[in-house]
Length: 294
Image (cartoon, rainbow, N blue to C red; front, side):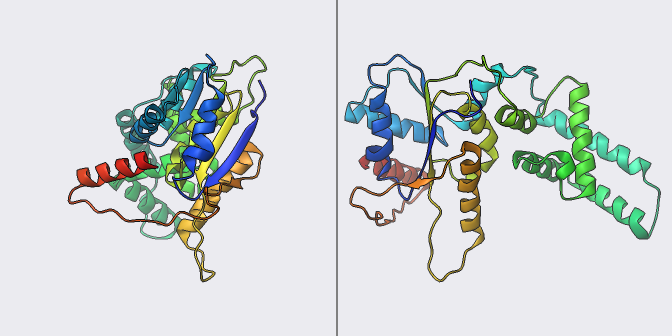
């Protein structure tokens, strides 16, 4: 199959237009077909909400499977040539501590200059290995190779950690996902599904980009629906808006298409409303009730 399936990229400004404009037509298009079709949503709770909506509206789900980004990985992993298991976080932390200690032992004692600065950085990494591992994970999930890391020490540590896991016969999850999303596919690679609908993943799900992208390129057709970046007056663009815009741009570049904005049924944005609950449980029930009402 080709590197990218026939795709469409849509942006929505609210949840109200998703059912009539995207979800229901997509499900109805497969009515009566036994083809496998996948819907990727951010959480299991959202999957339950959409399933309940289908039951209430009488829309059949034959051949349709709702999955989260984590489950998307399980779909594409068997198609990888190596299929190496992913090393667990506890073992990664253990390896990271050992690698940091090795680097510190190799550095000369010094109270000034570059040697002193490098030693201070490695000591900082040793003092909080959990944070160091999270920083490495974030950089890898952003699509950076260890040699592209912003600091020399992080680049050195990243390369050493990948090599250490490789010697043990394991892989790193983000590295595998990047390879699955970007490496050329063999012409005879079978499609994992006839169609996939990626629904509502926002910039906060950026760490799952390669997991989902790897699944998308292994499906015959794909529809990706993302939240539209917020538009604010005054001309000032904050970090959140830049992050949202970068998220959309990332999908545009991967899919090779331009995003189109969905309009609400009345051709205008749906007015926001606020709901308050005494507890988190009450708030969750209010959210589910509102989603079901839409």
